[in-house]
Image (cartoon, rainbow, N blue to C red; front, top):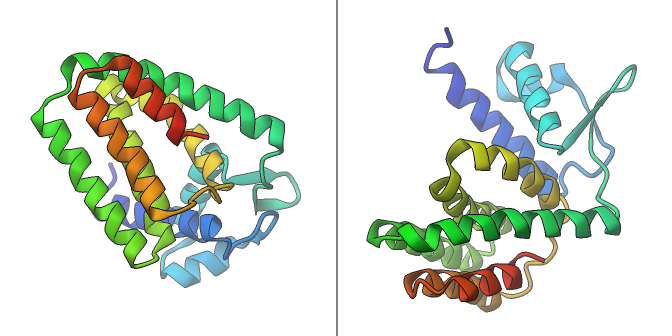
Length: 201
């Protein structure tokens, strides 16, 4: 059994490495050294190895025999386009289920994320922006389909995150998410799907 202390540490390490990849501090094809990471985070190599395996499953890292673990390369245009389509399909499926059961606590949860997203833009904290954007969509997925749908959706979003240069302007991004909430409130399934597709591209 894991003790409760180990799990949050691993999650913190995973989130930091994800963040370094998304921000470009760890560019594509950078080789990661287990011992150097263990030293950086003040842990043994075991938790680091677990995190590297987890991020490899998410598609952010690649493990090659004889080469160790490296940051994945960017998606080519064809694969990026395919992933957008798959993500839109999964989120459309979620939206259809959610429209039926959407309630006040869901509205509040999404409004809270949107407020934080707005603040992250104001502070120009673009790591937080990408994370909150994903949190917003993850909330929809989780409410609609639990862990099963989340597990299908998560690796696609993580892999797409490596090409997350679409953050155009704060007002556009916040407005796109606002449109999703408004359509859900109105229980207008077509409007929800339209708003999601406008946001996922």
